[in-house]
Image (cartoon, rainbow, N blue to C red; front, side, top):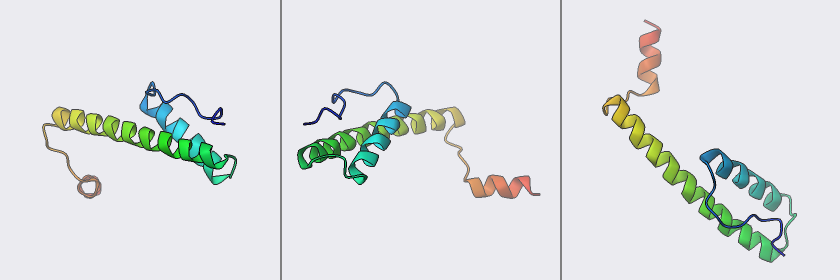
Length: 83
């Protein structure tokens, strides 16, 4: 019944996880899945969201290290460019 869903393994990358999540959402919104498959898709989607959140946190930490904790808001950068 869940043959449309991939195995619940770790995605190869953030982009792969986002693509899989987009496919799951499209299937669920399109009403293509029976109830059991929808529940499995929701579970897999939750796993993918957690994976993506962890990946984003890792990248955020790396950027903060690279920038020396001196990140500036975009508004400040745009204001400086216009001066």
